[in-house]
Length: 440
Image 1: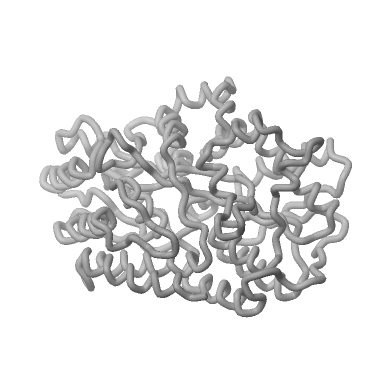
Image 2: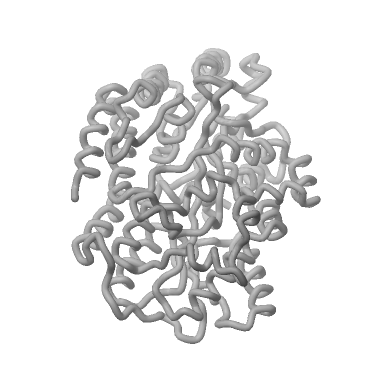
């Protein structure tokens, strides 16, 4: 399973040093205000869609595209697997330079802002607000606020440049057997409880409770859950008390043998949890299906709940997953791309997507779908993920953030390997990240 299917959130761990270089190259090539003229489509007959979904989710997406094409009169949607998100970003950047583009592609906000600075993607506001083919104010309001925010770019005039696609929220997955072995009845609600339970598990069972995947988005989520912020204007807050506490918690876990770093790009943490070798993992709600498969289809003996909090009365988590951007291709392809995105995000289809893949529905009204109600009854943790949309946050979508991501992961690695203390890593990260965001 883990060799053939990569849940959406885990792709973020693959966006490494290559990506800042591409972003800088685009900025240098096109500057910060409009891009080159004369973009052309890579496929003149079809609305080409670059995506990375594979296996079960990919099969469903292709089926939904076939259904859409059967009832649509414009250029048909043609989906093309374009590799990981990192590979799609690289291919898109090369296509921008060659001035030949797909009609749309999955992307994260930190990627889309670079595409927009190159003048390669179109703002979606005109399509969204079109009286005959857009969304009504009530329909747009049906999307969760945090979902809407992921496509809006304050540094680009507040315009909407991406549309929601595959969303998930960070969760705490737990193994009830390992907890019971340590005499623990319920998973932790606070970070103090998390640390205390990790210590108790190690003492009672000898197992390392929490295998960790190095990932910027997870660090950002933990800062939010501590009650902190990440960015103020163009200045990061990685040296604020809440951020320092995250890195110091990691330092304590490492020092006391309560965590270890898994191999990059793997899901060995979920495998350890599924095999009763670990108590906790921090992964997104899209991991439900993967963990169940690792357990041979067994849906008992483990569960998921919201991420521990500094203050459970003021919870926060992070919304993960890519959106879709539409490129500077012929208008008929732009309209076909928009029509599909609107179709895909309909209440019935976003519920269908959620039930089948583990992603979250992006619209409030999807909660009324009978299939989703039945799914939540079978998977209570997935309902907890949906409820988390009410307090989920999005990561910054500012120019340069793609490079900051790599710096965050470097700081996390420095703590895990003992090169720096938590406070040293946080303050060093603050300085390096601010230097990146201070560039013109």
